[in-house]
Image (cartoon, rainbow, N blue to C red):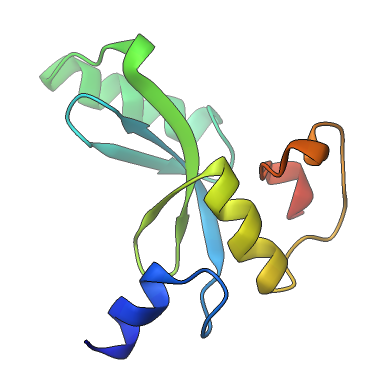
Length: 105
């Protein structure tokens, strides 16, 4: 097993960090990224993708991408961000162990 694969599977190892917000289709696994969930950049990507292959909005899951390109659920992203020292502020909803963009900047 190489180092990146090992780090990618353990949120508390190595230099793993949360790098951006993302949404993923539960139906086909397609991922769209942006600085924040549904910011103008993410919405424009959604429009382009939806024109080519319609997206079932009900199947979209919000999460984040790590520096290895892996999709993380909000819960997984919270563990990674906490371990990496990325959480700079706590806001409502953090008792649930879920990461929000507002926690990072």
